Length: 352
Image 1: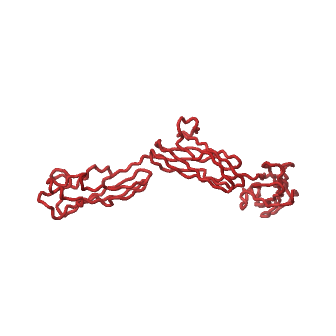
Image 2: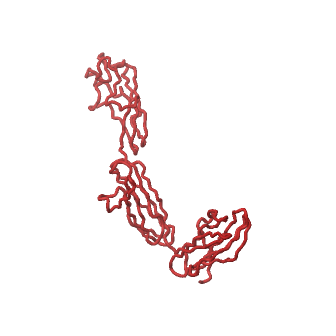
Image 3: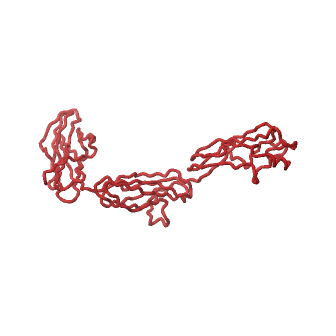
């Protein structure tokens, strides 16, 4: 090589591995990334005695031809709390990845430390769980799936979606006989080094109930997650108006008979049993489509305005699975225009 030396980095570089054979090894895996020809890479390995007695530590070099060498083969006896050190070197000889094992003999017990050296490649990062949550039936909803390439090479990515049935069986797209509930657009793409792509994952909510799928990734030229878990729950969007007793309110609210100038109120609850927020509004009581007859006298009926009735709030928005109290009020004016009187509904005399 040309004499250049670089310090490598181990996996979990700021943590020790698990306690094994009375020692703790740091790092728990020696990984050289983006190795190039003509460069010597070095990672320092520490073995700490975490037992309550002195331990004999000896580093056993990996086999010849593995690409890895270890600087320190002698046996050392270390007291509790003391560390023994060795340096692992790697020099790339062929254009391929290398894998081997460093064995550490601790008083006759062997601890194995994985050694890896990777050529420059794509390293993809993405969410492996994507939940749509509650979704309204017969709608198509979309979520973003961000795929980032943290490596030094471009990668080609392809997705293949399979559905998961209620019993847990995986059904590939080719066996479905219809279009999958989940789709990823685009299904294939190329992501350059340092780039990030946003893919659209769609759920076609044409079937009620839980929906689950698996998106399998095929990565050419790099490494990354192999599966993305997709899920959603398809529900009907239903809005109900409940009376004070919590049952469905009748099509016509009855206020009974009331003297002029007084006011009577009824409270109802608007319930959104669906997964999407909805806007609501109540139509005016006046005009040609007036839903109730306010008085028996036609002249009086024409003169009464929708100000006799009020609703609060008369419009607004209610969130998913939320409820809202509404106040319906009937208040005839203090001076009716005729002596015919009026009533709020067609209810008979004495009707409540």
